Image 1 (cartoon, rainbow, N blue to C red):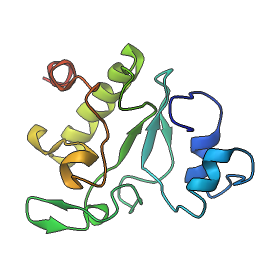
Image 2: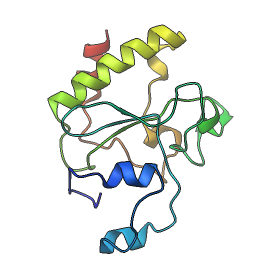
Image 3: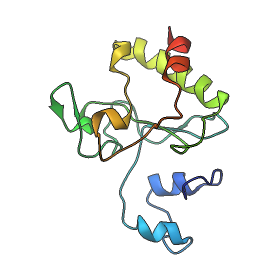
Length: 142
């Protein structure tokens, strides 16, 4: 945030309602956005947790998975710092896979239930985008 600009604490500030909307021109476009995730994985692969896994985060918005609406009510939202046209880092894949393995085991989640926002809110959300290597990720959690 802004798109293609990485680093800093703007995502954390957005997720904790502390973003200064006047600090950047892009922020004015998203002013008032209320969003969060259970975990953010920045480019360096560090895991930053914002919401307990058994609590509701505001990552999916209007969404549907396997016929059930309002995915925020029953899902775990993991955000990767990135963009639709920029590859994710190996550190992000490593951390995402490690966290996913733990969550799959802890919550008895079938692997096929790991999907992107673009799968649950098509047309409205594009992430993780075409640069996310699903095959690479799936091999890491097998």
